[in-house]
Image (cartoon, rainbow, N blue to C red):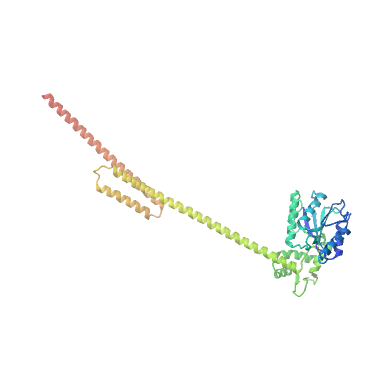
Length: 416
């Protein structure tokens, strides 16, 4: 698990730059010599005095020997992370090449604590074009993401918000802090003070505020009035006991805690953007769900329409089949069938067609049509049976007549 931190202490003097270079190169910190220098450096050995002079000369060469002198990054690893000093140095070098290319850097691995950590101190002036180094909040986020990617590539763990190194979730109310000083002050009751109370209130209120009014109201709910005046540089917080805390005092007490006007206004803008993005996402989700619901409704309607059309086609097919049966029956009926029967048949067909077109219930149309078809089939079969019976009787009469005629002729011949 790697934690990437930017040290924002005073960086605008030669003395501060010299001190930080001396600190990161101390022998009692860099115990095994895991140190790297990038950019122009002509000395045969690495020592803080030569590094400092080289950086000053580079600044004077570009006429940039003022303002911010350097930047200071620290990449720390959990005490239980199975990582070696050589691997830490490799990660530090990759980090420097990614974000500080063209700048002189000192990269050193410290082994004096219970955990390994890498210091990266960078000359603010580029030896390529003389431009000064600028880092935004977006750049810091990218640096954290890149550090995580370096760890993942090497099979190491990464920090997960709300979880310990072993993956277990932090308990509700468990304190996590951005510096050891702040952590000790907050958790140690003997040192707890109104300054710490104010800091805790700020940690609770700031993430819930999207503008100055919400921020002031939130602090007042927690017992702190806020003096935020445009004519004054600093914000002053006061509790019910009259204890006052200035924003600059909080920033000095808790390393890394920024609660000045500019930082808070930027945070309010970010929180407002997040809130608006959430509202938009919720609206888009509701709209998508409504569209999906309408889509399913249209599908069901279309399916119902297909079923109705299919039923109508089935009804029509039944009627046409009955009509064809009527036509076939007419062709097979004897020539002596009366015109009244044909009229009855035509009348029955018209009646069925009318029922189909006017009937609103397709099930009833099908049942009526089937009943009429069955009735007509029974009528046709009855007529066919009667016709066959008549033919059989006629044939029997003809046969008897023929036999009688034959006997008559035979008798007459015998008498001659």
